[in-house]
Length: 411
Picture 1 (cartoon, rainbow, N blue to C red):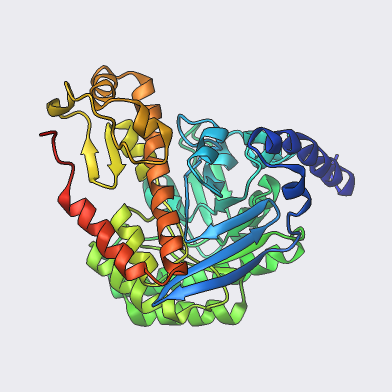
Picture 2 (picture 1 turned 180 degrees about the vertical axis):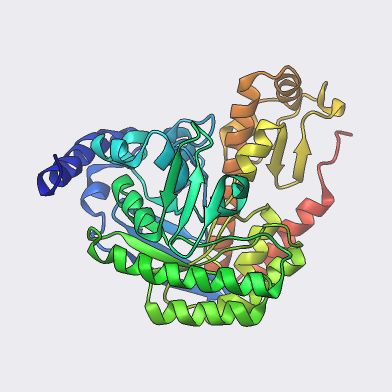
């Protein structure tokens, strides 16, 4: 059975299930009752090109600049939702393609939507599957209508069109949906960059039409494409602005190009995007990438690096990256960072973390994933405060100096 009754039932289930979760994460009744019904973005302060803002969604406010932990399959690997929240995250990312395959968008909708399903009451952004168009190129075919994938789960053929991408994201109940686009690797030929950019524009128009009946408060972001070609990026940005979206992303970066090229594209493209809309740099990146992209006017980021690198024994800190597999940590009783506001970074010795990593104990991956996410959130909070206080340039210099100084061994 489908139709309005099913939809209303799903909404009621979602409300019933996520209210207890809000309490478990410290979200009181006042915050629940004050949640906005409409999506909005407020620019609160600027410092050079760097921006401090607030993005209001149906499930809470996102302080920008913001970093989104990646929960591709409705989980941030190894961490409970309350642990992710405890690192300072306001918003998570989940993936349309992977959830379409398993457990299925319709099943998640029947269970109350993604917020209830994964016990995350805060805002969620869903990627449309455009990145998988590139990363799973051996398993797909593409034409003007959309993408046909051979499922990496069971080999079944599945079709992802712009309309289906929007439908799936509606079933998931995400607060921010992304248009379906074609992401291609760099470097690439001018002809291929233009073809993918124009196809992404066509799909953007179709996504906008499909999104026209979306529930109140949900937002749709467009994705500027064009590779490392500034002229194509300008053409893409102008066309997307003419169509009109709630936010604008820069996609197709961190896909093989150098950091220098990536930052040049961001520096050229960001000023062309509407100042009154949030700006999202997709799939980026390292702490240095984040601070440099904020300096060029970007607001929102996501990347798997904090958790992926944590699972491989690397810790992101104000001293730079620390490789806890290194033998020099074996007898070091110091905490990872005694001044870190996140307790786990102060509570466990380097020697113990080294032992966990070398012994392949899962606790090591869990602790380092959380510590890394906490550092990313600490970095974003530091940038927000610095922008608000007109001290961003100073913060940028001081932070980079800490990374360059490195993790000095005990005397």
